[in-house]
Length: 228
Image (tube, rainbow, N blue to C red; front, top):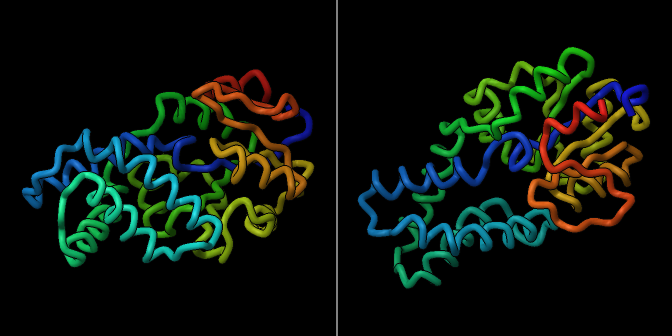
């Protein structure tokens, strides 16, 4: 792979940027600022799997961005037995997208591996996140300068694993599939999506989940040094 790859495309959330930690901090700020009687730990225990469920539906175009922002909170509060009116839930949803990119925690290996790879490879981002939020994350966490091309699903018009978003990113980067590697934490969206677009793919699998033997994987970002 070292002699083949020229362009490396990264997913952002859960791969480089510590989404769960930053998300928890954003909700903590919302609950404290609005003086809401919501215990953060209880909220997150329900919200995290609920959010994953509805993000999958959003990725599959079964719900809209507007519906996603509302329903993941509505379902969580309902399951907690917390009764907020729709206006407040929508305000919390807006607060969340405002506060989320202001927290800048990266995985501890992120800056080290980006600095290492940036010497030899051209680095890019392909993300399913909302455009303005993802831009804020990159800038506020201080890693935006590493990336030549940033493609998000909102401006691309399709979401990973649709091959078009990978093809669009490669076109903008001046890359070919055989010289391109996608790195991400989603087996379906990042890895299989990239493979279907003809790219190389590397599964970032910190939890050590079982995957088919033909899938190239790492458990720590620094393991990329052994491959590239």
